[in-house]
Amino acid sequence: MSPASSAPGGPDGAEGSGGGSGTAGALREALLAADFTADGLLELLGASAYAALARGETVPALRATRGDGALEALVRLLLLQQPVPRARVASVLPVARCVTDGWLAEVGGDEVAARVDVRPYGGPDGEDWFIVSDLGCAVGGAGGATGADGGTADEGVVLGVGGASTTLAGITVRTPVESALDLGSGCGIQALHAARHATRVTATDLNPRALHITALTLALSGVPAPELLEGSLFEPVGERRFDLIVSNPPFVISPGARLTYRDGGLSGDDLCRNLVQQAGERLNPGGYAQFLANWQHVDGEDWTERLRSWVPRGCDAWIVQREVQDIAQYAELWLRDAGDHRGDPAAYAARYDAWLDEFEARGTRSVGFGWITLRRTDAARPSVTVEEWPHPVEQPLGDTVRAHFARQDYLRGRDDAALLAERFRLADEVVQEQVGLPGAEDPEHVVLRQNRGMRRAARVDTVAAGFAGVCDGTLSAARILDAIAQLLGEDPVVLRSRTPEQIRSLVEQGFLEPVQA
Image (cartoon, rainbow, N blue to C red; front, side, top):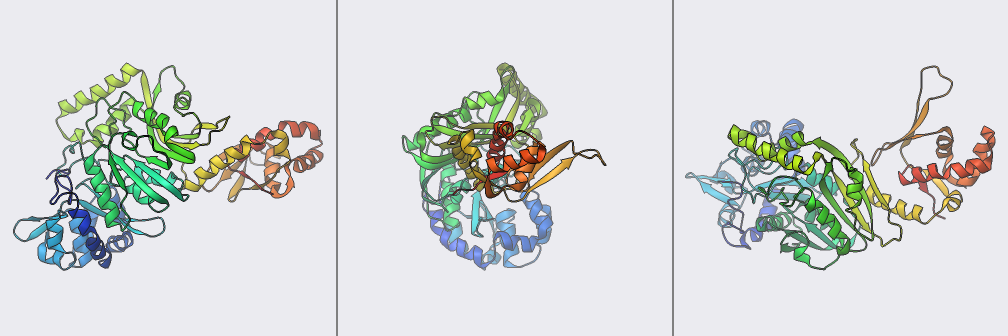
């Protein structure tokens, strides 16, 4: 059975569009009763086997589930895709109903097997959720598109939750909103998260199987069904506007569109560019659009300017490049993702060659990966920040993203004179590091470092370090600078004129927080 050959009560499933989701309530109750949850799995498997399962390695989990308990049976059946005796499963699940509605299939004479992968997923507030995906495709990326038989998956395959999915979920701003759009819903993980804080959730996908899997994921997780619309990009929603748009789109820059879930089918990085450029007019004022994307680094072109050109009118933007791969690394990553390296060597080499031909024809030397966040402000002077930050961060970052745009609003409305009249406090968990030779009287330079959020580091001079160190919200910036000038024997007027730029930078990066009157 290929990964995309069936789905409960849906395309190629057992009973049309309603059967699988109709059984979801009973199935959810049975799974919870057996402690088939993220916490239950961790306790049963142990940390090592649990982590291996997340990497797609099943041997440790198979060894840990050799017992005859109900949870062991469910892990083997639903996670490890092993046939299990029907009588054993019947003591835990409503087997007849699950077979009729396409969740399970009868195999051999007295065994049943899963027709989809069902994986526990812990929500941010401890919710017991379940992610449905195609067999053999529970973990996205790192071979996630490889079929259960080790070959290349069908083009309509629906992956489970991978690193990209959790990254997007972590950076998304989670304020209460009326409307949210999950564009390219896949297994439904983003719609599932959005349902926690959005009154109405709309999920779209070009792949009808993905929409059905999304419905099953939310139903099995006990979450109200979203509006499901089939189509490409923004076509299904027309001119409607939303308070939040999220998308983990098919961003892979490839020659052709072999796999629907990952290959956009447009030239180069045009799909990501179109998505970003069209998002502005689909946002309500104050709304956010957040995407994962790939972009080309082209000979003779500044990659930051390329991305600045994508930002739609009326929007502030924060674009963070997290990784860059040369074209050979990039081609190898996605050829392996599709399982091509396990097939005919000549076919693999031909496909590899085609990727390199495509890149060379466009003058592409490398490919960047990162996050793009837009906020609809309609400001006369939009704030567009494009930066490279490959260093570790602390997820979730939704509050950090929201705070970034709030700081842009704050700074945009204040000139240097107004900034000096403000009071500031040092942000929590910021530490100072002094770098210099051992025994030296003065450090060569001073670094302020964040231990939360983006975990930034900023090199500052003595004045800025002293300024940040005494910011406790009681004195204005001007009064602090006057005191520093007196201490250093400097002209206070000169110090006031040259320091606002550093203050502005420290506020923009989140080291200093304004104290509102």
